[in-house]
Amino acid sequence: MLREPVPVNNCFLHVESLAYGGEAVGHLDSGKVCFVPGLLPGEDAEIRIIQDKKSFSRGEVVRIITPAPERIVPDCPVFPACPGCAYSHCDYSTELFWKQRQFADFLQRCGFDGAGKTVPPFGAPERYGYRNKLTLHCANGTFSMVGRDNESLIPITSCGLACARINEALKDLKLPADSDSVTLRCTDADGVIAFPGRRAPEKSNWLTEHIPGVGKLKVAPDGFFQTNPAVAAELVRRAVAEIEESGFEKLAELYCGVGVFSVAAALKIPKLRCSGVELSSAAVKAAKWNAAHHGVDSRCRFFAGDAGKLISAAGIDRNCCLLVDPPRAGLSRQTIENIIAAGPGKIIYISCAADTLQRDLRIFREHHWQLENAGILDMFPATAHFEALVTLIKE
Image (cartoon, rainbow, N blue to C red; front, side, top):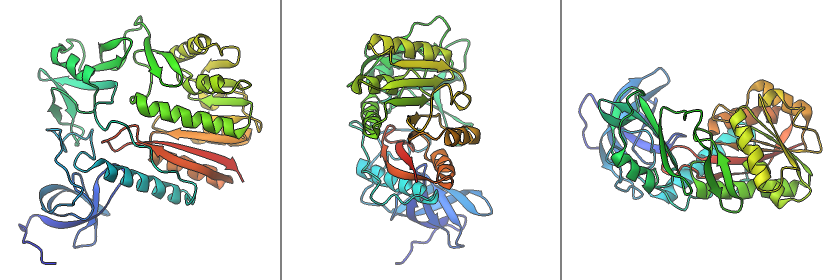
């Protein structure tokens, strides 16, 4: 193929794949790997190198010479400068294909063969307008997103990922005088609430969330809850099905938040007894309310504390199904070792960060745990992220 000439200071790149995070991957003429946002596999582009390391380079698009058939025009006016979205320039089936491939690569790298054990990806019903929570920076009299360089601020008046009610509220929202950021949160029952910073005032009332198939759940305004209710419902359904299939009558839940999985499982499995551990005392208080509201408080108990240090309190043993849903940082090495020593009969690992999931699964694999099944749910369409649900059993 004849290449069009490019300026001396720029480079030609043929895109080979998409890395975890959504960046296009190709090789420069020197053989060095180069990462560039905003391109798709099969495309030829003229790029400019903006970061040159010993083992890889990063670039930015100057012009696309040969566009891929999957390319679409992004709706967002600040794409790709804003790093919030990574796949707005391709159709949704392409996004799901590459997220599934990235997940399969992670499983392979940590020693698991996912062949026959990885289920098809679950795509979100809506690609945009799903987020029920949005945090924005406040600077120079405008609401902004942080740019890819983690320094520059990109002024915005709305966000395509946020639900319509949040974007509507943003039109009339005043910049907080005492904070450099603002958080907006929306529920069907409460509408939109906004508070300066990332933490709501201590005396704020609980919000009422709702998950189809489970019902009403209370959560603190700054407490964790899944940002995509429709996909969260499928995640809960799958987790409960795994718990039921295990046949165990005990469930231990680490990083239980407001007790969603325990309450949902107790509602579905009459003999199940649940124990949950969560660092936030406010979340534990909400979890207890949720269990009582749904009439399963006699079979659900919750503890506030470090999940890694309360293994015995959670009752983890070989007759127990263990569910872990840690934050992006994943599990600490000590927590994994404590779990392995306790020896649960089955582990359900829910993760929103495939890179730390890979790290943790490698340790379980080294201790002779094997993959039972695995799958991803696109909790965060258009972005670089996805949710994963993996089940492990001892060899």
